[in-house]
Length: 245
View 1 (cartoon, one colour):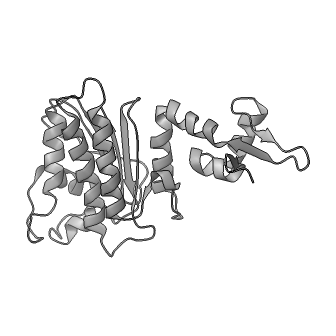
View 2: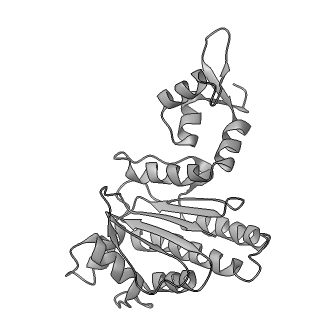
View 3: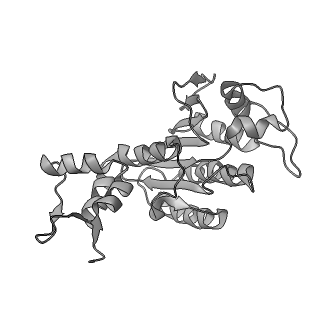
């Protein structure tokens, strides 16, 4: 098969929608396919799919959200997947370089890169050897739209912090503690201090952060002084993060 063409299943995986949805989009000309005359099978140009993702800022977050909410763990599309910390760190360096070229971020690009790196590294550090199903993280960004997305199907913050704070009983408590308190318990550094750094950076700059773990979620933006942790109606596996710049 032409490497520039994707099957409807491959396009479905990349776009984070069902095959049935793609068929409806095709029939309504919202997102036309390429039909093979002999078989009638639907194919999609890889460039068209990648352009769709790039031009729809909500698509990346939707993909990550679909992945972490799915009951069955499968590896995400390879362009968005970092199976280990080494690959994530390499891609983080590329992110930092690309951020440095974004107009208006000359004074903050290193901070944005640092908080994305901190969140991603947390996923690997806190789940090392204990991934429930799929190891690694979803990591992608669209700097034209000003978004960076990270997600993992790990144990979540509550399970991680209960190892040193067994009195924690809810995801809401754990998320608040992770972003506000210094907790010792892991040598040589204190556990969870990185998210306090993330909070400080976001609160002091033109950055917006959405973070969900389990059924707890919060949003932080510039000049946030008091965290408001909300309870989500749906529980997810691990963590889901959206950074807007």
